Amino acid sequence: MTIIALGINHKTASVELREKVAFSPEQLSRALEQLNKLSEFHESVIVSTCNRTEIYCSLDQDNSQALLSWLAEFHHIEERELAENVYIHQNQDAVNHLMRVACGLDSLVLGEPQILGQIKQAYNSSKVHHVIQPMFERLFQKTFSVAKQVRTETDIGASAVSVAYAAVNLAKHIYGKLDKTKVLLIGAGETIELVAKHLSQHHPQHITVANRTIERAKNLAQEIDGDVISLAQLPDELHHADIVISSTASTLPIIGKGVVEQALKRRKYRPMLFVDIAVPRDIESQVNELDAAYLYTVDDLQTIVNENIASREQAAKQAQDIIDGKTREFADWQRSLKSVDVIRQYRTSAQEIKIELVEKAVNQLQSGKDSEKVLLELANKLTNRLTHSPTHAIQKAAKEGDMERLVILKQALGIEQE
Image (cartoon, rainbow, N blue to C red):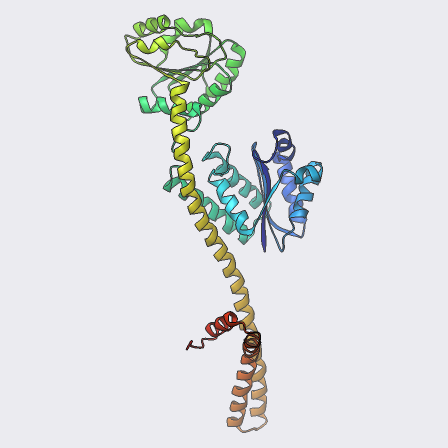
């Protein structure tokens, strides 16, 4: 049995090509049904995300070309174009790759945890479509176990590796829990969207989004159940916020020292945290001169991010050691399946010989032949039949001077080494 992993990701293909080979939920169902009907594919799992599309299959023999052709035909893409951008892993390499992906070692953001949930979802879809058999059941359960072990035993996901995530982590570090804090987000671009996404997981008491374009701010606010204000309203609304995180495209500062001074006065000097992740800056640096105002800039956060990236890279090496060990364990299990088949065949063959010779002996006894002679003949014939193949193998190894095979045969037959 051959295991194949065929795919493209953010390292090997452009966004345009990744979009072409991505599977919508409807396409995924149709694809799994098609693969289930193809005789050469026994088991299939399709992982499809914004950064990767991967197909894991088990086959009687290596037939990655058939899988490539099927993928190109399914998505109506030139096979040559696809072939130039895919990677193909087989057997242990495929197993190792799957485990690396599940642990976030192959992600755009090293150690990101979302991919594990996406692989679990892909596995469950294959279960529903009956394209999971014992081999892949064992493989994917092993993979989920490895991912859990890596999360538990390494710091692969412990540190922030994006400025947006670092900003939220900083706020959490200062305030502990965020459930009693009021947060003001200034801007509604991609960075603030990421901040809002991370923030929502900590359930702050209230979130307000301030933006030049109210309509865009409303779209973001609806996703996080927040309120919206315009930038012109900032001087009147700033004092409500415990945490202010800003990222706009403004060329001039939006919040000055004087505005913050007034806000602190209205708050009776309860502390405020300002996180400015805009370039150029949204918040005047002089704000840091005020008591009870704590300002962090993108440079402060980038230093944290760089340190954390180095930490994750070290954790990734530890994770890879765990994955390599689990890959070998799975390979050992695969080999044990082959040995089970060999043992079964060997025992069946010996049983057939026994039944044949015992039947002849019984017939001889029933015809009145001397029982002692019958037993002796049975023992001799059984010994000769059972030792015929091993004897032939020993003679062949000796004739060819294959000492390694001779040693293995002696060990297998229980012949003591001199």
